[in-house]
Image 1: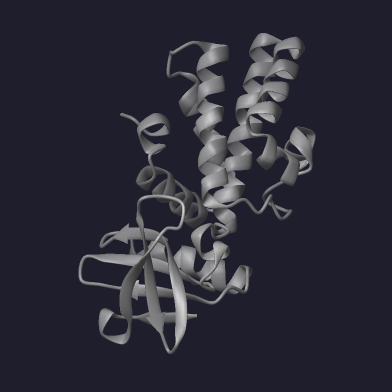
Image 2 (image 1 turned 120 degrees about the horizontal axis):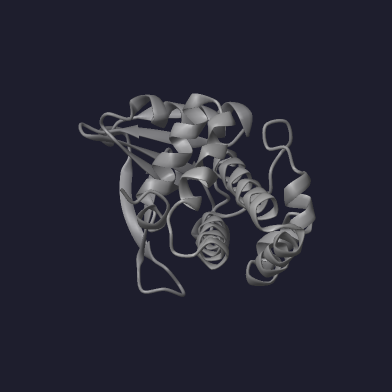
Length: 214
């Protein structure tokens, strides 16, 4: 666990082997770190919370880079496929599971068991990889993310699940955004710092325009 400044590190980038984009790489003491999250200068507490979550709770070697106007979180990786698709902080998976459970619960309560079964089947098909890794859709529903280790999804997996979740919300409840705040309210059970970290990641992703639009 390291709290560093730009003077301590060397930041470069490498070409993604499959996509037309560059991957930021941080080097420190002959070790390589991959960018996970960026926080603005007013989000110091959220940045430190995400840092502690990775190091204290998950035992991952990571760097928190403190710059004049932002903080960035970097995780130790090898220069291989893992670096390009790192496992996300566990709090991201916790938030995702809570949102799945909340939207499923709304479908079941408001539309009935037949529709909730259809919801589960569609998510299982359209997010097959992620649901399989989590022990199936039933496994996601049975998971208590506050007491158990949630599925260890990569960030791309989380984004795909939440994109599909929003699509299903619109399918079952129409284009009315009312399902969104009900689904997001499930995050209220998370510790305050965990919730802030998850929402910061969600807001910074492309999904922020869907789930957090004003």
